[in-house]
Length: 155
Image (cartoon, rainbow, N blue to C red):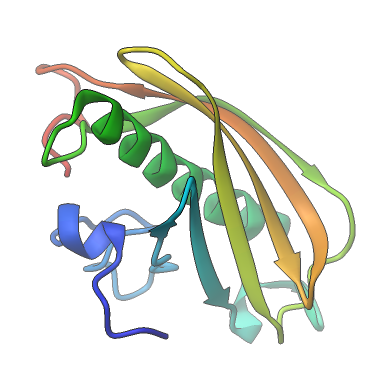
């Protein structure tokens, strides 16, 4: 773990999101970092994240990929707009492919990249890897919301 502030700590320090909120003591607390054209994160589960002994629950995998991709979309939209703060984005759709059981004792690596971008949305593809082996993939579209949406101002 790095002492450097991650995307979530810089732009959503009060967020209580289960997946990526820094203030959610019972959440996953994903820490995403822009790195070149990608956004990356490393995360380690606990036994209570397991579906069965030694293997991560599929819902936890979904939450990891969803939140990490959402942060990647917000980062890319912020860069495109040359803004100093990301727009608040929400998941419009996403799909996950579970390719192999994901060991819960490993440090997992998430890597997300931009596939397509418009003024108010970004499509992101991501992988989740354990010990260098891709165990899950995701593709999703994330949309910037406007005033009046319940998630507006969550960043």
